[in-house]
Image 1 (tube, rainbow, N blue to C red):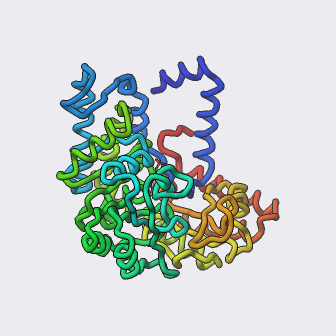
Image 2: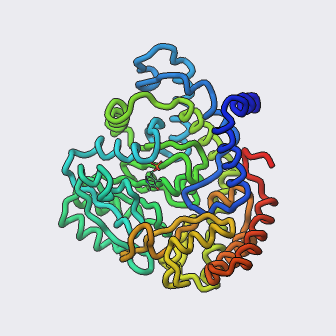
Image 3: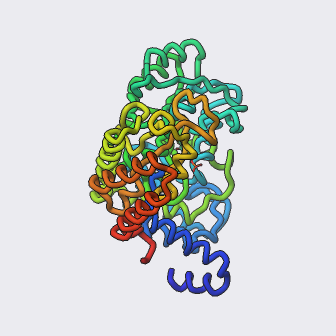
Length: 419
Ligand SMILES: *Cc1c(COP(=O)(O)O)cnc(C)c1O
């Protein structure tokens, strides 16, 4: 790796300086965007390997190009480890990222024009769950369920929607919902109308792998999708898990339905990630992600932040910054940026403000926990954030808070970044 770095530095100082500057940025600030994480040095090594040179269209044992003895071995490892980790009957490890992964499932299970019952986007659903700006929103008909103010889902209401609209697919999953699901209730609703069930656990994949959150496959879900980055801490990529009876359908929906050659360096990196996630250290990590999220949420609430749904069951939380501090999400994001803390602006349920100036921010603990931070550090961070959000114009205060953040960062190195 180091030799490769030296060669890159000598050949292309422009690109190399952006990489080293990004290393500094990641090490010198606190990452609270809940979808981000720091991957393992072993994953970086697999991603930077010669497997990137190889074309492997098809699946192990059934490829369209020769020379596949090593790629077959590595893809089989990835599939077997994914199945063991998630108690799945079948795994497809080829999706290039989360968005093509979900598209492949929709096209595999449905016909254009079919109805999908999914979570309202402002209540936590993801772009790939049929946002009007996405192509999927044009191809399929999305009907929405919402959450109650306490964050619960009214499953009777979801049942009524299912009976009224006759979806072919019932989708549970989120990118900004801080609560746990009742997967069995979704399964019953889908069964009542003859629909398939899909859970998109992209954000919480690592927490489900570690069994600190419920696994939808245990409740009999047909298909589960997850990104391999985010809380799983692996390479950018997607993973589809399904029942054996759907294996052929899902595999041919990914290739040749949607994609060409898989990125075998990414598949190898996913295999490494699944091996890491099966170790006891990863379970301890996942528990700490949850403990840190609870500590952060409690400290923010104690400091006057209004949390959407009042708290969190997982790794993330959403703060209504307009109600709490009189700042829109962009102003709050910028104030926290100035003290070295990265969050993202976020729409809140039924937000009337535009997405670029929404009513809140979203925060989560996977990345800071990877650095080794614990509950006391979360309480310190919450205190600094509250102070900054209460006085976003006070340059002197923000500078001293930034110093506190920098001191904390120096205690917790980022994996893969040398100090
Ligand atoms: C992040 C995410 C995706 C998409 O992943 P990309 O890799 O960014 O394409 C899909 N679904 C959910 C719920 C997500 O959070």
